[in-house]
Amino acid sequence: MGGEPERYVGVRERRGRLGVRHLLGREVRAGRPEEVASALVALHGSDPAAVYLAVGARLAESVKTVGETERALYEDRALVRMHGMRHTVFVFPAELVAVVHASTGVTVAARERASLVKDMAKAGAPDAVWLAEVEESALAALERRGEATASELALDEPRLREQFAYAAGKSYEGVHTVSTRLLRVLGTEGRVVRGRPLGSWTSSQFRWAVAPTHPELDVAEAQAALLGRWLAACGPATEDDLKWWTGWKVTEVRRALAAIGAQAVALDEGTGWVSAGDVEPVAGPVEPWAALLPALDPTAMGWRQRDWYLAPELRPLLFDRSGNVGPTVWWDGRVVGGWAQRADGEIVWRVLDKEGVGREAEAAIEVEAERLRGWVGATRVTPRFRTPLERELTG
Image 1 (cartoon, rainbow, N blue to C red):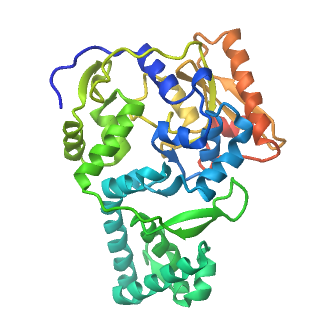
Image 2 (cartoon, one colour):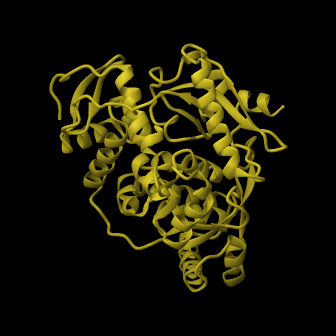
């Protein structure tokens, strides 16, 4: 890794790279959801609708979004919904399951299991030996069923219904059910994954399925592989960006950068990193492009330092208090506003940063709004994490 930065990469080029590598320019749109997930490395999956909206914004034929994404997720299993970086649910290409599990999941899983056992012990609930029996029984039942909800699994293994008090005496005291916490632990351990939702593509209630088998990789090698994939999609990025996106320690980030031979470049905010051999200038899309990206879109959430594509004064309207981005309107590589869907299905949008946004831009944005209306149809989409502008636009 390393050395002095080989050259300066300015804002214009960074926006151009984003437009091409995130499949947002009209001429680079994808044919299949698998291409979108591969280009972006990971699609935020904690809001189910966001996965489809992120795919639809990048498909050449957006009317195929729902059917093709369901095929990739639930028929071909080319895409897998699982826990990943920062203990967040993502949708990954299937070939990255082992890499994500080894690079980030193992550490999180150990912490989650220890927390569950500790919480049960505090509440006087059954011990770890009992829990191990229940989980093996539940996994066997899930294997027999293929896919099942937590309630369905409890029909086969009634001990999953066991409840225990959590944080007794605290303001956030509550009651947890073993099934809820245990399935979460098994998910972080890479033993189960989310299957088909109970309702439509916007539903957040999922069935569970036994995770596809995958090799156990060396942690350092897996971290290098994941960081290499992400830099190819999102580089250049600062060390701070990388630490934030992965959720790793800074020593792990530096080790992975060295392992892949990352090269330094100069950015406005300091030293950035690109994949080996990726220091040459990259041309952006042929024409200026517009996009309506959903809440939690991986492009809007891809970097911790965002001034090069998002003016700081827009953040209070476009983010919630926890740092989750809402639906955004883009023009040629930068966020210029936000959008929402009203109760009657109408897609409405507002430009907040009007610099350089003239008639051409507004016409292109309206084309994207119509494209979105065309495939969403009668479905109503409300972000899981709502932001001030989105609430205001919905009235």
